[in-house]
Length: 261
Image (cartoon, rainbow, N blue to C red; front, top):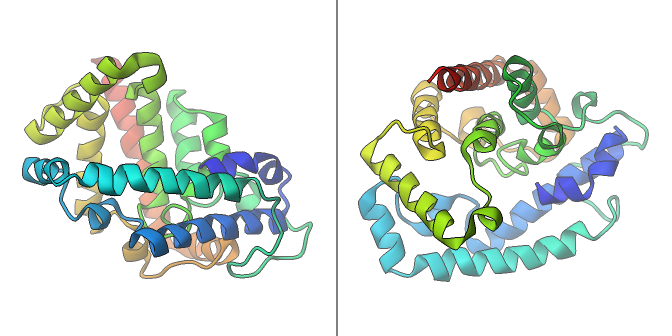
């Protein structure tokens, strides 16, 4: 998302060459991450199931929170700074770069997967953010074309974060830790509080139950080299259309239900 934000002006121009170059850059970043850390998927990097008490305990006690996550965050941030500061179209590679002047995917800055979900939720409930919609291209193809978490599902989670997430800089350490603990208690106890994890995790379970997986690579049976390839697939895929419609409608229902409480 930082890469998309750093090149937002390029996105808003609607030039396909620049949009495709951004897809190439995001794809390159996720490939770099996978090559350096083994996987872009949390469960594979941690080697435990964090949705279970035993898995989370093992994660903490074995020190993986430091040897994996903290270590990876620092190295990833340094690579990100280096990457985002380079102008687009300089040697970008990922499925080729189209001729300058052509329109970007869908003709919109937000891309193919999450943007439609976000727009639909905002139109129906008023919950949303235009900036998030514009940079949600970063969620396409399973987060930066990595084949990971479905972009439509990632887009569905963002409005829930706007409603029930916290800002650690504003909350401070004590309140952030309290929210972290509360979220885990809700997750493991299955409590239905008005809290982000309590609201979002059931949505993930229902998604997996309905569609069989949370990940783009498994849902589509492929990974994508670039934006043009992704757009061609999504625009003709009834499965992707169903997933986006389901994500949009479920979050609209959640938001309206919580407003009535």
